[in-house]
Image: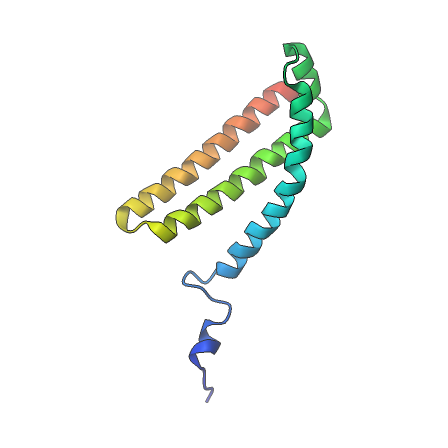
Length: 123
């Protein structure tokens, strides 16, 4: 017969049983964004103010296009998880569920639109 204390039952489990995984995802995506964003700002800043052809030439090259796609995907996933965590902490009831669904739909819509626009530019 095993004796489990309250602490033993709680180790590694939050209320949703995925708190540690969520925390590590947010930490890793934060570090990734800390490396991606300055590089993206450099390429975006160099294209800013250029003619239409210059901007197309910049973002049709592989590295700026892949960098932009990574910033879109990682940034919006980070936004989705952070906003969902904030909503779960501060809202209750059906408004909470609706706000989470709106946040998820918004992040995936923005991600899809951004990747579509990038594909149109890069291809």
